[in-house]
Amino acid sequence: MGKFAANLAVLAVLAATAADPALAARYKASKISFQDITGAVTVTTTGGEDVELTITQGKVYRPLTVKLEGDELIIAGEAPTEPYYRDCCNERIRRDESLARDRQAAAARPEPSPDALFADYPVIQIAMPRKNDIAFTDARIKLKLGALDGRLMLDACYVYGETESLGAATIGVIAGSRLAIGDVKSMLELDISGDAEVVGGSAAMIDIDIAGPGTATIGAVDGMADISIAGSGVARTGRIDGPLTVRIAGSGVAIAQGGRIDKFTATIDGSGEAVVEGTAVNPEVRLYGSSIVRFGAVEGRLVRHGMGEVYVGGQLAPRR
View 1 (cartoon, helix red, strand yellow):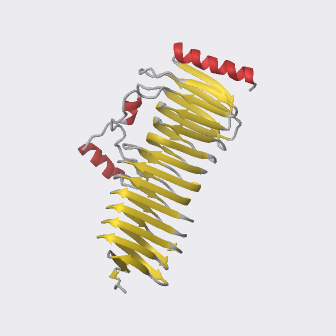
View 2 (cartoon, helix red, strand yellow):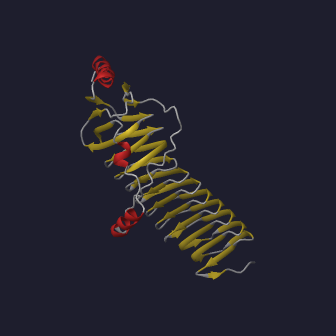
View 3 (cartoon, rainbow, N blue to C red):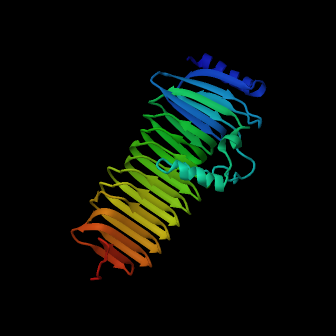
């Protein structure tokens, strides 16, 4: 699409969002950015080259603008004038829980439906090349994202939804968010603030930061893992085959459910706990307060500082 055609498309969007409840347009772009969006976003990935965009306005009017800057397509709304604290996404998303148990829990404790909560807001549908990147900044969205070879970026977002596999991901979610993601081919970075939950598949590397009572549950990790928790959060992974660093301030818990940790270091201040159900090689721990570290097995020398407790194979390790 030439510059003139792109400008016409932007004007068409502005006109459509001002007067028409729907818009459809086609673009050439390698990255799509959403800024200050509230609504439902569905992204289908393709093997093509074009980006196809459809916007349907909801009952709650939120002016949207669309512009093409270089090869980046930017879809922007208006920043909210009031804090967005409503806990609209408190319905859990799980990949491996009992559906019968979930139905019983839902019947006993009804929770608001995201479909109903987002029904009045715009619906944005996109078909985009699978190789592209997609980013959300300060978004409040119900998200459904197809498999992506590029990178997903969520910055300070309030999200209820799910994605298929991702090439790479940098995800920052705030309280109330519930997000399920597929496997991540390279680096997965998670920043969880407040009572939010992210459930994911396997990843090549992970960097998890939790502030508050949030939870992260990730599958197998085939490389470096770094977990930091401030508060009562919980970070759980499948096996980790690679180095693992754990930092906990408070009562948080970090769990690796198997694997061989070839370099394990932990610093825990408070009543937190780190659990390695597999094998740790030459682990070094700094434990303050009533903190605990548990190992399935240890190879080499265990180095410990502080007064916390260390268990190996279920047995309390003697202090030296």
